[in-house]
Image (cartoon, rainbow over all chains, first blue to last red; front, side, top):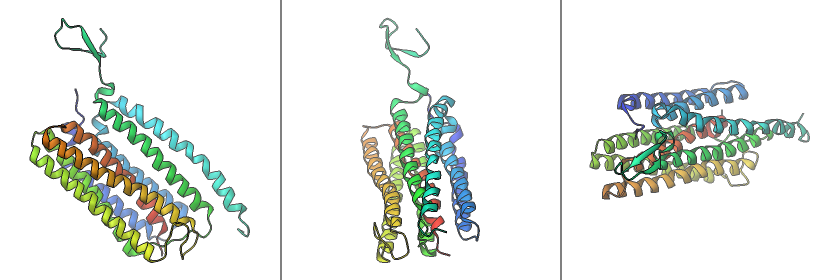
Length: 103
Length: 209
């Protein structure tokens, strides 16, 4: 049986990924103290978090060296469910605008 | 016989067993399925938090520099424990049992340090007046959202520490093999990955300027 942790999961690769994840976390902290619009800040934080998660899944969880079928089996379903949850936002904005004295 | 079947025993036995899906052990596939279901659970709770935060005009921003530094130290500890878990699994695959056990227990120690830092953060906020349904800064929904998200994550960390300890002790006694360590390593990296979303969305977006 194939094992997922082959030569592609070298210790050097792990350390590089580890440093990248911590560097991205530091960058997020810097962004948190920038004087930018809330939506822009949220977008930047989310994109950096997705990048961190991508690195962790690819290298730490060895998705890179697993069969592609496994990723095709797991990831689209997860992304689909999470994407469907975005339906809540319109209601969230509606609630904000309907608050008494909101304007 | 199809390629999906493996012959077990002697060729005369004609006993067949279905090949593992995606060429990974069944236990590992089950862990992956658990991880995606848990990812959706965390996704749902983070979406619920986003809903509340967006729809509330007086959402508090209570996190000061010490809380942000604490959150970064917690990130450092958790990501470092993921790295030590990987080193432990590599040692287990190389057959170096003592090093595998050592690195796995270092991982557990990392998890426990993370949990202590988390409790320190919680106690600090509780000391400032944060409760489940009230706080001195703004909307009372903040406490419920904060404790739910970070509490669910903390529960996962503590469960991971217990599971890795049990599997490592079993591995030491020869009951479990390196696959079992690798499977719980997957869980540990997942817990680490969830934290990567919790910190920016729950802590950094609520920093007091």
